[in-house]
Image (tube, rainbow, N blue to C red; front, side, top):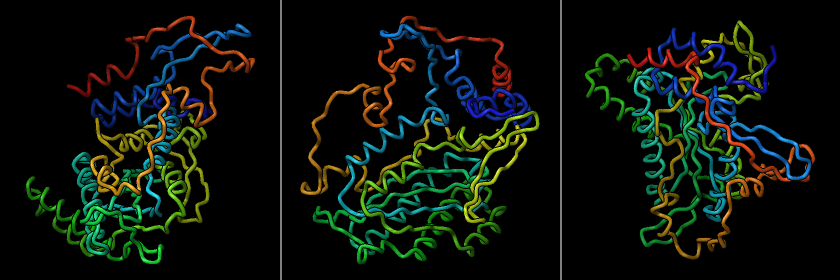
Length: 383
């Protein structure tokens, strides 16, 4: 049965009950799956609109606005890109990726909030230290957490947008890099990041009384080369921000990648980087698909995009005045007007005659259905 329209929502509707019974996820994961299943359905309510020209009507249902939903990210992504372009410094930017080795996956899943926060901290302290040691400046970075691979496997890594500039002790903005092509030595970044993160892991395990049990793994990780990629600089902030925006509001899987949903499970497309990035189909049982997807649901309230150093809000006023762009004249816009300007998509335009404007004639309330199969499962996970 082909279904690329509903995609993830249909998978949740078909397999969520079995997944919850088998794996007993926490209540936040269950509520998240429930929200994704209901997105743009009568369950969330909506409104009936009528065209002021052709008089035809359409029914529009509300979005869940959950950050894990593949249907609700386009507007957020467009707004983020515009905001970052306004703040961008007139220098080159580098894309740096820090990856945690798979041996730490078990520890990460056990206490994901602690592990992700610690990983952010170690990534920034590594970049900050190299800024001071190599150029004598306070550097900056925008860091974005990703946790998945192409096959929905667990693969925590942080993408960093690093400007080729830093703030000196005198408060001046100084351009950094060697001949504009070289930021930091990649072979040195890896062991420094490894040392910082494993030091935090050892302290955490010692506090829990688990250090002795994990010591062989830690010894192995100290001897292993960790992956830190430093990609060549981008010609302008425009290029790097647009490139990085692909990562900012991406979810573990988009509906476009889902090819088929049937009783046996889910078939979706994956990019095989080991085979020249060829697109290949992969099939998973429905319960296994949801188990993997749920591993990438972030803890409640967790911030996955963070700004450090000179790119943080508290440091922005300290930058040299000559480097700052004049604030544009702000024009009050509704989110719908901003979306039209950025994506050339007018939510008010009549989809039938393309001339009239749609206006609301009836508001549809949310549907509180006691027959929802996830609700009894949610109650079971709380007991």
